[in-house]
Image (cartoon, rainbow, N blue to C red; front, side, top):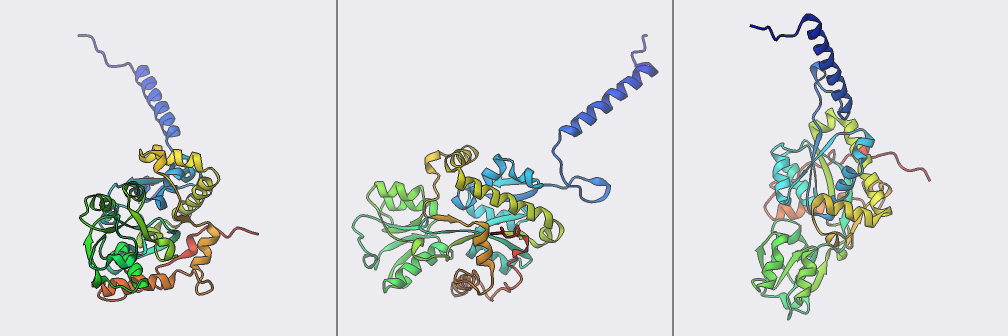
Length: 340
């Protein structure tokens, strides 16, 4: 029987070839920071995102390679269910989460070991309360049904609208509805008004609905924040700083190249480019973020807005006590201020 095993020289050649292939493969792999014993590769920062204009710069940062340029390995975890993003965070499936202040406060009540490192933008008209034909003014809503996500910003926006026009929540019937489902309720006349955003605002407007109120009339109240787990903040501070550098790089790029930015987002999220717009939404520059973090020196300081959300959630029964928020908002991870 012929021995088909390689000779001594053949084995050496085979081992050398295998080693060369391993070196070549390693050279082709992206650099990742090391972590733990034995040089084990650290996993990427896992960060949630979804269908909301305030999260869209993440797609640009990924597509343009800004995360890599800034030296951080990021895995974006897309979720079509915005509320599913919260569940992923509380279950420990992701390290970071972008969401509105009401969610930040609720997370704090359950998991106080988190840090808010970015105040990224605010809705300035993007959140709209649309009304069916026949409802010409807020006063016409008395005794009517309004669709909104109860215990969340939708209910807050409805409450603000009613209060400013001499009505209260007791004067209407709130129908607990996700923002993405409001359009169908309006079109089917199961409610007479509802809180939603684009592209649903345009859809119901084509059917004759009109805007009664929007977040443009409540500046700063409905804003987006970025939070990370406390353990991640303590163990991976340089990566969070790099993440924020890439974020602002993407924001600046989108503002400078809006058409290309829209196309990148449309490809990444597989949505029509016509559905992408920053109308009614303000993405903050680094200077604006720094100003809003600065304690008490500016009317846009975020703490009074946080307190308003805390008050709402306590009155709504979602919070039994006021969470300690003094150490939660941390601006130390922001890039240095731009010199004049």
